[in-house]
Length: 104
Image (tube, rainbow, N blue to C red; front, side, top):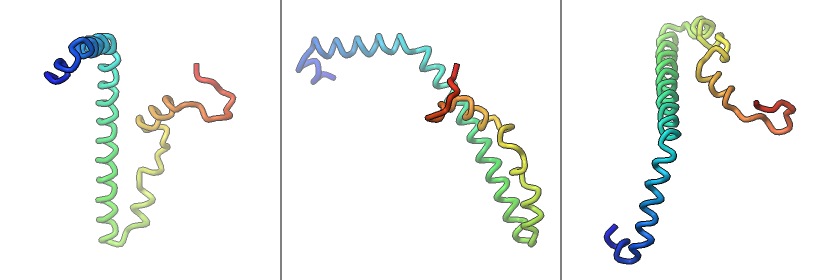
């Protein structure tokens, strides 16, 4: 930063002030994005935990030769629309090209 001031003090000051103004103006949006990121991270952790648990039970079922019975009792029979992550993705998804419905 010392070199920047030595080369052009006016331009460096302008850039620093512009950055400060933008930081002040977008602080609310930044906090909202951070909150959404934490929610997505939490949902992903739950998804990965459920996936790991399912794979571990599948490994145990394979060990005892009960793969078909384990597959029938797997949580894939639950409709995906009941999953929080799926509903969040569907509600935020942009309309497909050529569709007549518009988001309001």
